[in-house]
Length: 409
Image 1: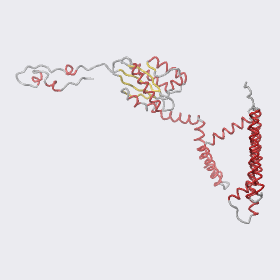
Image 2 (image 1 turned 180 degrees about the vertical axis):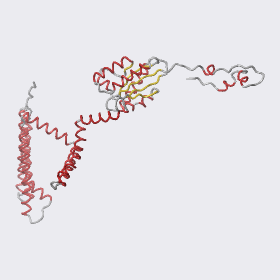
Image 3 (image 1 turned 135 degrees about the horizontal axis):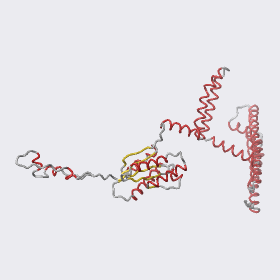
Image 4 (image 1 turned 120 degrees about the vertical axis):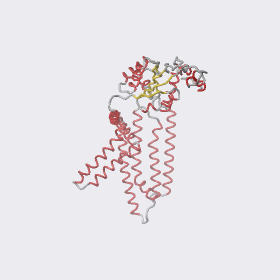
């Protein structure tokens, strides 16, 4: 930096020279002092250039044995070779080699090349880590010169850290490394390729798009059979069901259910059979409840209220529902016994199912005037005693006869 000299000194620096140069009579002509004598000769000593290779998502640390910050041309080149060996498609490989290339081109100047990295996922944490590593590099540079930086990145995402770097060191420029291809075409190609390779994104985007594209050809085919409305309704319904399932996360639940079913078939679980049986019995119970509701409506002169409707359905279906509950509970008990995990308290389930069924049958029958009050009282008492006695009995059995854990091989 040139020192600052007041202009008054430049004007009166010689009693004869400046006056003579202005043509004042009686003075000797002497040349003006050159500016170098007043302001100092221009310096050819440039500030030190720090070439910073930025890896914001820390591919270097995650894919190689190198830990950032990496300082020095040889170490950065070795890190680039290691990253290229681990993942040849990583764009940060080009960033590291570009930093080495810049340092080689400016070898006659005072240049140092270094690589800094952030963290994966969190942009704020990544920027903070880059700032800390830049501070560490600046503190370790053994130079008394002014330091400026040239930042090398592979895209706009890594360039988001520029304000953090500028707050610590002046930035002379930014080099974005782009592979020598049609950049827009390459970006579009790799975006489409990534979408097609990702099952989650592929299912989210391509399935509804495919359904939409099928609407027109299906409508054309259906027009020959005079059924265009059916096709439009069916395709829109499928699209709506798909989007609803994606929004509610039903896809993952369905996948987990299918996985459990497959594992159960291979493991020989009785629960699969009893669950299917229980499902069929529940359907039969639902039909029986609706039939009981129609019968009650036919026998009643007045319109049924909400309580009477619910009581009629329960009264007709509760026996079937109880059978379904017994089937599933017995199947679960059988599987736990075969797996060596059976506990005494698990045997309470069938008794609880029976007790609940008795209470609901008696209560719904009392509402429909099919069961007397004394019968309802007896049912409530019996269900209560059944639940309490089974709980106490199996609790005592569990305390008196504890099941020893089987050693695992």
